[in-house]
Length: 261
Image (cartoon, rainbow, N blue to C red; front, side, top):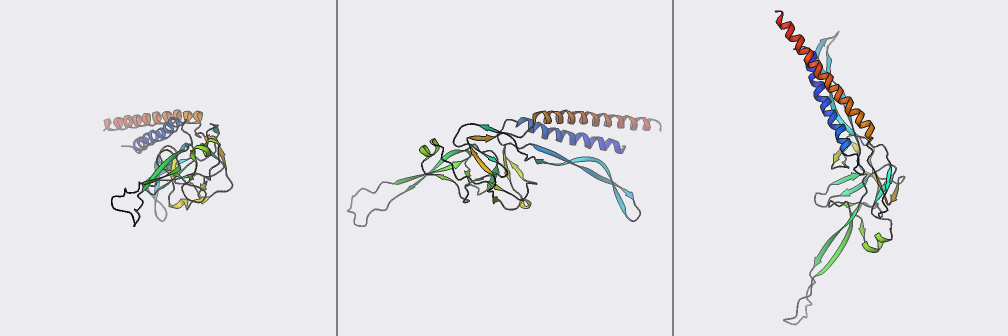
């Protein structure tokens, strides 16, 4: 087969993967805090060409190296809800999973309250008479600021945020000490769920951000540009069609050449 056949075949496959990225962006256009993904391509290096001093590689086609999150700012939506927050500036909300011990970072600040009830059994007095009824168990309820999925929001002190009076504090809109954290760079952060991110080693350790501002009663929208994504979908479809046409043409040429033998 001619090299053009394999180049076009690889190109068609990679354009399909590119189309999936843009389609996923469109599907999440209305999800709060979602960050659009941007596909990155690199040239494939296959084959060999004899150089002056060494063997050189020649490129045949390209491949989708991966997709990176676009952290460009977007607009906010006013909700008037006391547990909704958005970040004006850089940084993320930090979420702690008490079950796995993992931390997740997100720009989506639609929070809720979750309670943990701890029950303790008081010890009976040493001088209690036989037959005396044992003390009743005591329960203590702790309210945590949560993302609604069992993860706790981390405060400026690095600990899960607790709310002493959930009824009155939330009703009057008392600001909570929600921490905003950021990393040296965002390259390579792994997506988790719809709008969450998990840092990798090269991102470094999270640090508390003091320059950004929290806005209560607002929530951050998705930064997906629908018109841009739709244009990229059409572009990917056209490229896919051209690659298939190239495969067909290459196959026809090979068939013609074989028929001349």
